[in-house]
Image (cartoon, rainbow, N blue to C red; front, side):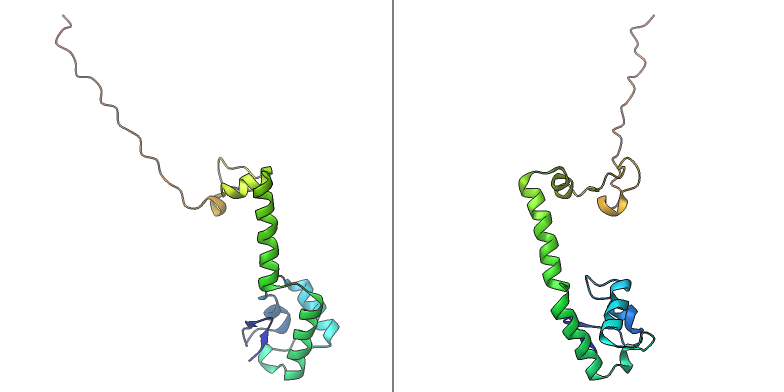
Length: 132
């Protein structure tokens, strides 16, 4: 079992793809980690030796901020924006896009499912008998 950065990686994936499952590690950084630690790129995670796993783990803990620490830091940045009342903080608080995207259409990912607002039917007044 390859447990890297407190995360169980999928066994059948190649190393550079499996490392991208760690929060804060993308594909280019995963390739860089493999090159720095001397691990082959095409090898599957299940075929890694314990030495390879420990080398990757050591590299990540010494040089990178990943998973819980990184999530806490990002949440702290967002919390600071909200507290100081910045525009981006207000957008975060209202759960709207923060980087200038339009919201009249699209923005469904950020705003959630559509909430259909029913129209109140206005009944037409009956033809009055007063008219002659």
